[in-house]
Image 1 (cartoon, rainbow, N blue to C red):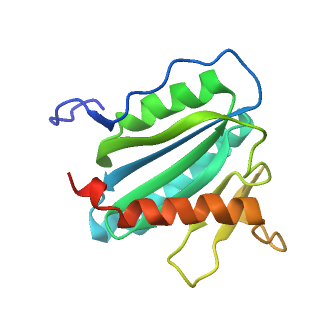
Image 2 (cartoon, rainbow, N blue to C red):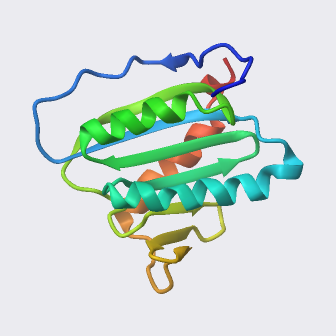
Length: 166
């Protein structure tokens, strides 16, 4: 980011796998350390969720978990577009210690009806968010599917893993 004195973000963990020859939906999951100051976090997260609207316009969907000082995000969509978005995200000064957790093709998007989701701590309901012309709003009446629950639980587990402490 212009004027940012931090060194370029290093992507830790596995290198991004080479593009696969085809098929299905490309899914990528990463974890990073939140650098947003507590006093500005609510407004900044609101901005992040609003940006999800432009992702939805490119048919990129996903979920974002904010837990303590960690983000875990799953992105789904066209491989080239998801990879390009991830590269931009990795350079964002609002976080560091970006670690690729998983990337590959899946049969279909798990979060296809969501622009993004606010994934909350264990025991509380997740909040699917839908992008529409006027912005982002909770997806009333859309409960989490079993497939979504599996991915969301993997995301929660990634914030508890000792491997993110490196």
